[in-house]
Image 1 (tube, rainbow, N blue to C red):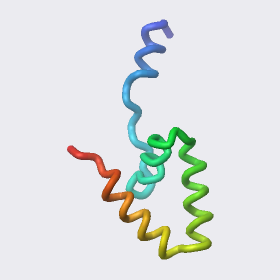
Image 2 (cartoon, rainbow, N blue to C red):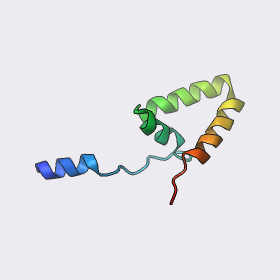
Image 3 (cartoon, rainbow, N blue to C red):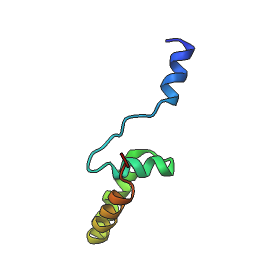
Image 4 (cartoon, rainbow, N blue to C red):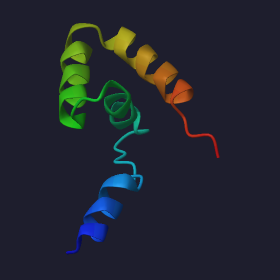
Length: 68
């Protein structure tokens, strides 16, 4: 791998890692956090307040949607 290849790989946009709408992945990118941590926090919060998490997830899905 050349120096040019390394630079190119770090500057091009990464493909989305979607599971269910890609909300956790997009939120992790915005907050500069690991995706697994955002997903873990979402699951733990869903155990405490499932209705609130589902509503917030749906709203985030709309707000964070890709505009094409």
